[in-house]
Image (tube, rainbow, N blue to C red):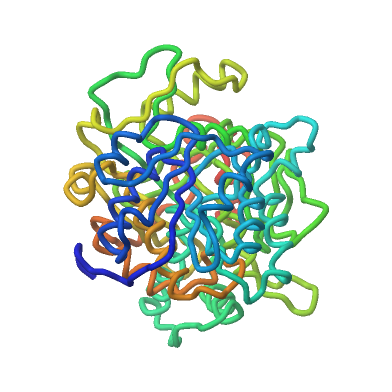
Length: 472
């Protein structure tokens, strides 16, 4: 793949809902890599931000928030059989848009399963029902009905999305490096059997963002390198993680859901107040936020091995995220205000002066200890590759592009999660935009250097227990 490869030609109409940092960043990629005319694309968004960028690219821009009451009326004239809806919005129900697209015959993609406005913090719902687990179960409930219908790709950004494809490549790399002969699996059962055979107990989406701005964060301001509404929304949801078969006991504040796949648990606290120990090759050991993400549930579910109704293998899976330092300060201030958003928000873009987003998957418990596989992308590389991007956004936007291309190449697959897609095809499309793609082994584990200053309650018999990762 090159920077001028046209992956396919698309003759239908495309509607992009939401035009924040990811919408603005993906539009140049769509125009570069898909044969599509500018007048085939319409942007529908809830604010004026991005209007100048759309005008510069010659794409129609409509500032009109979508609501429960108006979304069908707004979208129906724009979308029909064979068209495509790219949902990059916040506060618009993904499930409602999937239902609409199935009805009219349009393909669909989103980067997370969003509820209507207020759904993440609706205290009339139990923590279980305002979780990503519940949103995923609600979406997958339509799978049988929509089978064979227009493809609806759920949760295909960087994470969730790209990281699911990293996991598969990482498993093949570990197999090769440990002498396990294996053909590339072709189905869910084969991938689960491979992960179990390799002894992978824990998978982190381990990310460290070191991008630095020339404009310091102010008091009363939330600063981030990607969607602030998106980050705060998921940060205020319960911390969630796929729950592995090797785990000995639930955390004291951990709960199972009383419905669905039972692949995950939640903690009775916000993800943005929950920290875990993790490791990346450049950063080494660090503390990350256990922010809820759909991939923690879908990966754990996908790699589950059962004997009848009994689970014989499942990895523990969760996000371990250290955002840029100004975002960490912003989260600290947000928590101090009891999760009420600061009056000002700033998306870091042009003022970023340096830094790298090191985003990958950390597979632990196998013969070689820990293995991180993923993307190291600097802000300088991102800017040279595509307009309107930083290091964080480009890892998302190129995965959105890959998901759109895959959906157009596979247009009648119904509801699909990233784990069910062709990982090699997605990685092939993304590769030119990921900077250094690195696989690295390490000798780290969460017991390293522990108990040095004070005694700690640790499980020394099994370093891969969740209690050893959690920061208390």
